[in-house]
Length: 173
Image 1 (cartoon, helix red, strand yellow):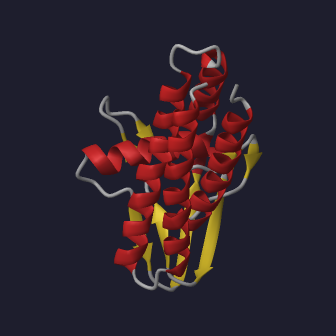
Image 2 (spheres, rainbow, N blue to C red):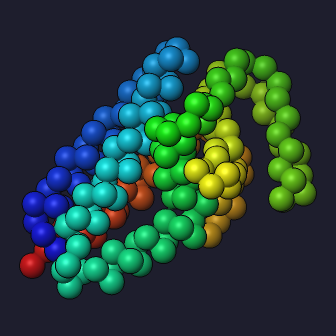
């Protein structure tokens, strides 16, 4: 694995973590959406930098395993597709909810979830170039988590990115 690629991924990770912190501190919908977009952008760049660090190297099989994991994990796939949607499509990937009562019908899981609480940014289904629709994640690492708000998605994804970059750094030769 190329050390300069890992160093570049570490810089992108720091930017993603800064966006996560801005999201947590945001007090209005626009600031939350800006932090969401910034997080998605830098999360995607972490993957791109690590791909470049592994390209043509002995670590390419490790990288393929990471790409398989991203494809198979609802949360990781969603942040990838949401980043692409935010970049290439006109529809928003989020909706700001004011304080109040809401019901979410989780058809795939046969239940309705009620939410009463503070304002938050909720992820929406996103569409890719081929027209495939990706619902907001309800699972991560094989565990059912329930309907996640954007903040929870950012938090879980940032934890995964930290682990991913740490593992890549441990593979330097």
